[in-house]
Image (cartoon, rainbow, N blue to C red; front, side, top):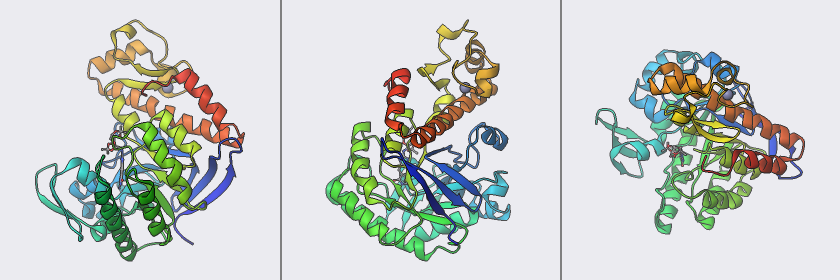
Length: 374
Ligand SMILES: CC1(C)O[C@@H]2[C@@H](CO[C@@]3(CNc4nc5cc6c(=O)[nH]c(N)nc6cc5[nH]4)OC(C)(C)O[C@@H]23)O1
Ligand SMILES: [Zn+2]
């Protein structure tokens, strides 16, 4: 029995989006799904109990960060990431390639791997397919990502082609280094930038190696949303129907809807947790910056249509006061709401697929939420 299997439930007759389940050793994930990001073994300010209250079915953590601190050996000695952070549902770990480029200085890519300096203390470090697999093995995540290179955006055609070919060779090395295929699934990451023929090449090379799931990398890196949707239009159909498809780094309401409509099953993004910490919230009426003066005497709920703990028990005035006063409880309340909002949105997406009306749902949602940059 493979560690990760995909169960297709139905395809929306109106949009082509699909309803499914991903089966993992730590439980089932209903898709399309949004995965809260817990980069350093915690979804910032949330307890595992609160994440379960809102029915987060899987969370993300990160090889790069845990490799640097506390070190994967400590997590291994703790019994793995599930035990270390007291989370008994599925965990997906990113492989670290992308974070090396988005966080560290002084990096040098070779065929062997990437030499870089830690962004924490400048120590010289090295990540490679083999090291990334050893670290994820120590973390014990249910879904591991292959070690890849995410080209910068924009990037020249020749650079992107050479980069995707190395990513394919690195994916092969990850497969060879994969010690526990029966209790950890390894997803490959399709690259190819914004070039249709290179996306085709990357997808063909990786799907010929039969991974249990495929991620679409190299997006949400500064390109316009229209360009991202264009790349999805021709990349998603290249991936197998009977495997999960994961779009990395995407998490605004509009992008989640447009991605689901195009057949994406899994999403992750720091957006909801990151903006919550500066008092910006996602509500059914669009973005609401609750720290703004206009809410000083607004004793209504953050979002009148939301049933979450924050919206049932506290007012906008109180949230504004806490955020302005730098009270940690304020960050917890806005984070709880933002995550609940996106998880609730995905529940509504799954219901709309079941009822063959996802395009109608998208139009209704945008009419209320607004097309503003959310
Ligand atoms: C949208 C938002 C709010 O998310 C923030 C910030 C900037 O974009 C993000 C999200 N975009 C994103 N694209 C990715 C592509 C890959 C990839 O090709 N390979 C691998 N292994 N992991 C990836 C992770 C990715 N995350 O990336 C960082 C830099 C992690 O911060 C995130 O804007
Ligand atoms: Zn709420």
